[in-house]
Amino acid sequence: MPDGTHRFYTNGAEVIRAFEAVPSGSLCYEETVIWGYLINLEKCSLDERLAMLGRYVPVLDNWAVCDSYCAHAKWMVRADKEALWAFLQPWFRSKREFEVRFAVVVAMCYFLSEEWLDKVFERINSLDFDRIKSDYKTAKGKPKVAQQGTVQGAEPYYVRMGWRGCWRPPWQSSPTKQGPLSAHQTCLRMSSNSMSAKPASHSAHTRSRRCKFSNLR
Image (cartoon, rainbow, N blue to C red; front, side):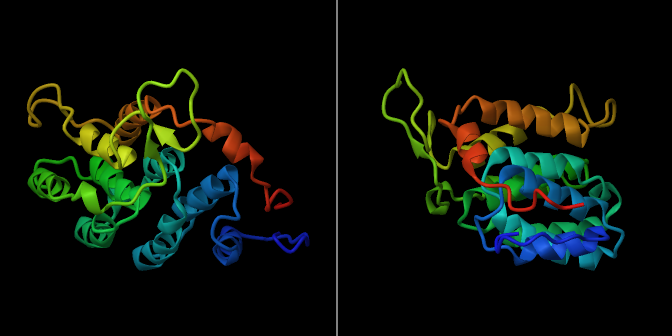
């Protein structure tokens, strides 16, 4: 724990509440991933899950955690799509890069059906890149050595890559002939775009952050 004490939890809900109580920016990469997986696995109502997810999305600070969560959120397949779509709207309107990417990736993973395509493309096409703030700055020129906190593309790079993934054909032909990509396939495709950004020293950055919950059982 951040206060140096060791605590033990008996169920996922207790661990989720413990994660929620940790100050922003204090969790390492692995802890943030586990937190998301626990939300996906928790047995609860849709309203309760969306409330937990609403407290989780603001901690997303890189494409890997974002896309990993979305790919494993299988409950979204069975969820009330109207309620889930309504939940996504504030994130689409967010000024924070990975909150917007979250909404884009969820839309790509779980709303690629014929009845939702018009809404998805209309919403994504309305994104205002100029108002979205990014912690990653565009590198000048083509540096031979990667520079931490930079990407080789226009800002906000990770929203643009998510948006770009939306315009790659989700079907080989028409939706009536072939089914859409699975959530996992979609996230893998979008993640491959993000990996091309090569954010400098990202892995080193995440490794350098102390693991606050290493003693969870």
